[in-house]
Length: 317
Length: 304
Image (cartoon, rainbow over all chains, first blue to last red; front, side):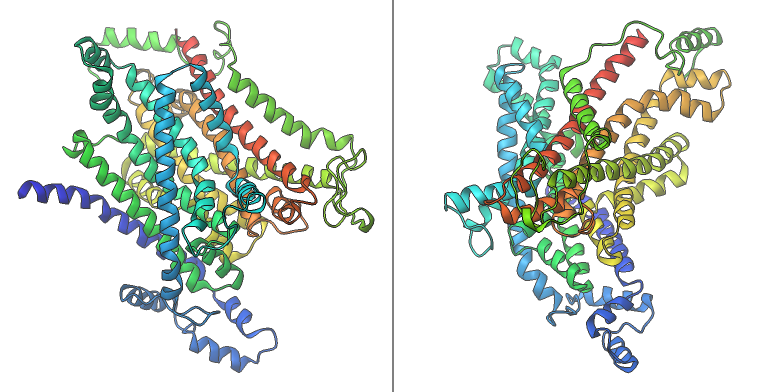
């Protein structure tokens, strides 16, 4: 029982600091966006509004009160699950973002899953045949794939799979079929990064003495790989993949826009064009929250699989 | 602290002083290590791109503004090397300006990111103390905010101007430079030769710049190169979704976005900007990685 509690605590521990990060990020975003909200009113009422109209709207939107009070209110409402109302669409922000949050979550996780799968398989293949033709070609391919911008490959995919072959829908996001192309263009660079990481980790690990010892005492290659090499080499990869999700969420903003995929990223971009700050703020906070939670999760997983970290001898990597 | 007898200390410090990577000694010993293929290719690509934006414009007329209705969407020919765009503007000129802008903004913003990042990192890694703690926490928070989201918040508030873009790129880049410099400094200052330098009475500034900085600059140079390629990707991504620099200025991402509509009638509007983004990013990535390996072997050849 105590053991289980300790395990649970170890998994939860990383989350506390991450919540602080999310809070500071939210504070920062709030301050930047709400510092002088005069432009918002100007946009909403147009150029020919009277002063009276402007002050009415200012009062209506609560913008006449000091920043600190508005921030306190925002936090209190936030904790109650009220993110304010969209200035342009007139709907609660939570509803707007909530509709799309699941889509972004789905896109992110499917991309990470696909990229990790390919990354680990190709990385292993590359390391097992170190300096062979296969290794070289994988290395070259990943170098090139890393340099292809996601939006460029996105256009190519749309042309190939939607326009020429007609297999998959080009834009939208109502079904799982809509998920395939955005996932593909998001996961190509990620898979390349993971492949290279896994490869270099495995090559480092293969040169260690304990691997030679393991072979020398008669273990089969399969056993050595499974029990020794993979376990040691892939632990840092887990953290790394978690950190990459930050880039992925950024990339998701662009890819969602290209594919008109109904995710949070596209909502944020649209909201910027509309100067709809409450939506931008809520979107950014939720995406940061998602990023931090995923990182916390990967930390927790790492604690589970790596006894060295579990015992608290954490090394900075 | 190390515990050495005075005689031992003298020996050790003399030994390490002989092998200092001081600026004058850099090029004196042994022959340079051979240049690897990635470094060669990366250098070649980067010099090609630089030549494209710096040298070529002095031989070819660059006119990206003139609108000619008669030759809209003309394919590449002898006059318009990359064809014309939807308004009849010479696409070659626009690509040159786009590449020039990409290289320029990535260099400028990385340069002004690297300087404060490296100085802060050296300072805080060397002296540690409460400010170091504070900065590290702050940097951790900034690294927890996806860079593109930070960019988007700033752009949402201050609009899409060049200043905002550069400021954004700097803010999102300083934490990375700071963190890597700090970590390298922390591990470097525990080395014996720094101890030796201190024991012969060198000032802190000399220790930081001549002993520590000159030993960690390979990884910083690599970071610089990789960061430049990241910025090219980020700026063109922002330009693609319409949050980058605005239309009159030619920018690769924006060119690509407008070329998307003519994929079937004018392939060059899509293919050429894509290829140039790919080339620039590939070049800087290869250069960064190649430099890291080369400088690694370079410093080893000095030390032994």
